[in-house]
Amino acid sequence: MPTRMCVCCRRKDEKSSFFRMAQRDKKYVFDKEMKIQARGFYVCKMKECIERLSKNKKYDIEIQCLIKMLENIKKNDIIDILKPMKNSDFFVFGIEENIYYIKKEKVKLVVIPRDINKKYIEEFLHLQKKYSINIIFIEKKKSLLNFLCEM
Figure (spheres, rainbow, N blue to C red):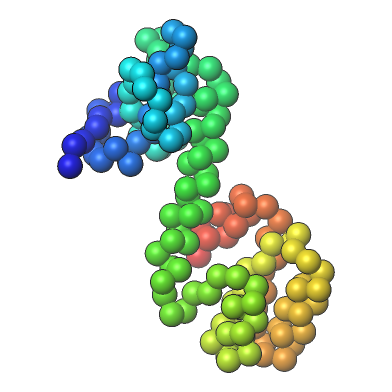
């Protein structure tokens, strides 16, 4: 498998471990899908490397591209934390699945976004009383990430 190298830290790894920047009209843009047919380079999916890239005078990169990469890192943090758990017998995704497994007494903790349908919130609160489960309400994705990192 071919490897790529980060222009900031010089780390080598597979293509999927990096963000790609491609040259367009003498500027570099974030090539999220890695499909732009143009000269480009790779940067690690780490905040530190993106910060170093923002200070690099060699590459003309607009701030919006850097922000998109940082937002992508935040999304990946949550996904990377949850992905291995999805196949566990002790981790359940989805409202209906959680309700089912609460009733089977397999779920003890439920993390719920505050903006779900009120009907479901009432259902979970009812189940909380009946089955003695813990419920944590999360306002924003950042709150979820902070909660998971504290565990």
